[in-house]
Image (tube, rainbow, N blue to C red):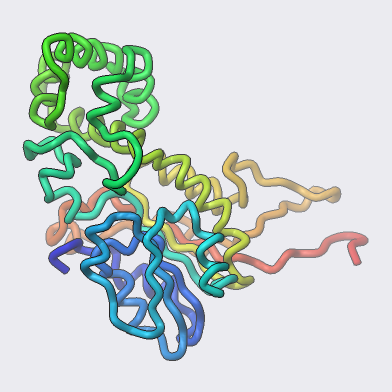
Length: 307
């Protein structure tokens, strides 16, 4: 458990696993905490786990019922079909960054530790945080802070970055923090830095686009009665998950049939988000912002003159 302290561990597995002989998916393997708990519930079932972070592969489970996919979970459908594990009985997603990633300074995820400004979940591909911070213009930086950090002072923050990089490229987390300090609201420095780093990380890893692709595919990937269990850590993710579970689409608008009956492919198992109790938060402060939502794929309902 040193790699990552799994949030809402038993609660999420209780909601997820209904059939010990079923097929389950953990799309955010990390250190394997949730996956190991799922495996303990299985009899003849299978588990397919996804993770694009090379560090996760040092923690793999040695079991014939376990399949690991070294890929981003936006490729859910393709790899489940490839491994003949489609459709499935349940899908678990524990979004966000693992404790291991936060606590490894050279990954650059935390403003509290000095390290290379990277933030890529997959260190082998794509632009790093360093690329974004040194190449984006004022508008692109400001928009990123507003959209993904929900920060109204995005323009002032962007100007500080542009000014700092005039003399030299910003290559470390400490250089970025130093550049931003004059624009941080007094008394809210840590909260603002946390949101700035969140915004950059989301942009670097295209996390919202990945979540959209995953949710859209999850609907077809689930059997009727199969469950989707998602743990999110900020309002942008939670809003998207809530809308999707309520309506079956990303807009959150419930479609109706000719007779005005709501057409929702999911039945909500949790009406409100489940959050960790005080004991868990005390043991793992990073659990504080976690919200768990669960939906079950329902059988299509026939209305009116449908035959």
